[in-house]
Amino acid sequence: MSTVDADVIVVGAGPAGSATAFYLARAGYDVLLLEKTRFPREKVCGDGLTPRAVRQLLNMGIDIDAPGWIRNKGLRVVGGGLRFELDWPQLERFPDFGLVRTRQDFDEIMAANAVKNGARLMEGTTVTGPVLDDRSGHIVGVTTKDGREYRGRVVVAADGNSTRLALGMGLHKREDRPMGVAVRTYFESPRHDDDYLETWLELRDGDTLLPGYGWVFGVGDGTANVGLGLLNTSAQFKNIDYRDLLRRWCRSMPEEWGFTEENMTGPIRGAALPMAFNRQPHYTRGLVLVGDSGGSINPFNGEGIAYAMETGEIAAEIIAKALKGTTPAQRERILRTYPQVLKDAYGGYFTLGRWFVEAIGKPGVMSVGTRHGLPHPRLMRFALKLLGNLTDRRGDASDMIINALSKVAPPA
Image (cartoon, rainbow, N blue to C red):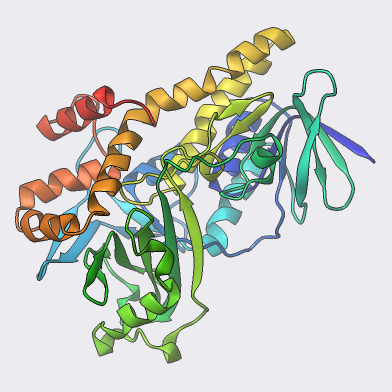
């Protein structure tokens, strides 16, 4: 086998991997970013970016004023016979707008930004497993489908929900964590240009109200991303044909929106949403987990891109500290702090999210919440902050309540 060495090998050039590579390369480290596909490539996603994700893009110097980025003012909520608009909150820590950008080129933009800052990207490189040190059992590199071997001082798993690296290191999913499923497609539609992300809170399979929501996110190019997100906390989860459910839901929409088979610009695709740190620990024997590989999806709303980028930044900071003039033993001690740093940052909040999804999976809870919560604007503004994890550290009363609850809840 031929060998290519780097300080850090990052497997997967999605938002998590590219963010990790960006921050490490900017700090002066030699980073090898391995991506199994070739750009541009498609990913199943709603394509909507909350202010939390926008903050990360701005921090990385992504030009969000370039063509193709569509801004939105907030969230339009439909349910309980009501329809109303909630603007994104005015906060010090986050911008007051969201974005839409298809994953068809979003991930390519992220990877190109990492390369611009010094990372080396290899596309069409499928990682098949870890290379382990015979004595310590630590990962020292990866093997690829074409028979090559790449070695690094630290390896980062950013290869998504079905991560081969984490599985190769014996890290399996936790069954006590919620899992979601997202299905989506694109339609040519007059709904392509909208100032708000639109969510529908009443998804039904016959007479059964399901835990989840539907969405209509205008892409701005003549098409709209239309999809459903569902949770595995209901008894019906395993028996639902999600693609058929999306078709039926679309047929119930106003005819003038054009959500018909004839206007569909691509097939219905689905993906699993690993939530609330469903794979742990996030560091073991030289391997660091970021993004979906560690289940870093918000269980409240299914948002993953913001947390992918944030965990990438956190991981990069700790890896950089661990690699800077340390002995192997010192490096190991620093890397072992990463799981606790993640738990301190998100653990309590993700636990609140787990309780939330367990509650709405029970018959009647979703119905009662929709019927009695939606008519109260102040309560819905609080819910927008809670579900979007959008608070200031010293903000108003709602910020203080959410922050306090996240602090006292046991970490996920």
